[in-house]
Length: 321
Image (tube, rainbow, N blue to C red; front, side, top):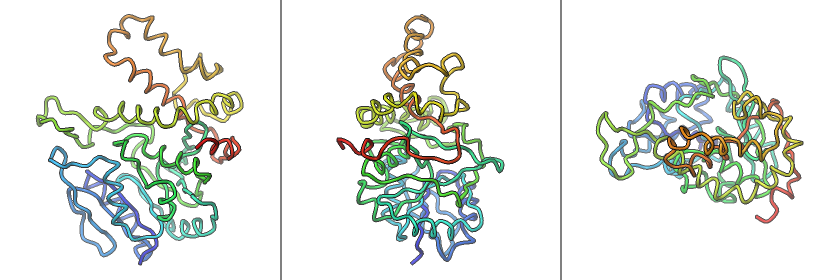
């Protein structure tokens, strides 16, 4: 049995093949579990889990696909990734060494991400590191309640699984020896090639077509807000003055004039702007979604440093949970 299972949900066969090829140098250690409507090229280390095509009856959400793939995975360690990220030579042996040395339970390893050879700093939520691509022991999934919470459909699933690790007294940490290369800018939201999700509606082939983002962005932010804001916003607010210098402004979340402001001012300025500006006010059909989406973004900020240390005591993170 291969110890590492790489689970990928894909709707882009060409990009998928390149990602699978990047794992082939470690095919003795890695199985790739592909959840997709289109089977990948046959390889002895690749397992295909077929799902309906976009728009067909029974189409699964992004979260459901990854959970389905995880159920078909036989490895001790589960890696979740996208079909446009590529692994560097030596990554599997480095990951096994890292995971075997880490005694914390539950534990989630966050991979380093590079764009054009440049390692990017990592995102945090409420000041806690999260792994948008990472590795977790299959046994630890039992502790945190599975990989992706299916109350989400696509967005914030990676943040949620990381916060569940922290909330159980575990740890999310950088695995510095595993670097994933992206074939796109990590700050660019690419939605044009994503699936159309029917949500029970009949979609026309061109006019009126909606992407996953159109359907699930606000929904998933609402779920995230409901689950995590009551637990961690007060902690983030209480410590924001100390955490603020550790956050970068390169993510564009906070405008220059507000970068030295307190957290409440940062959260409220677009709300005031919306209600004071009639053009913005009348353009927003769902004002609650607009405000909530902004608030979720404010607590989801990139770290300014490449290293990371939890800014809270673990007792504060697990308190009341």
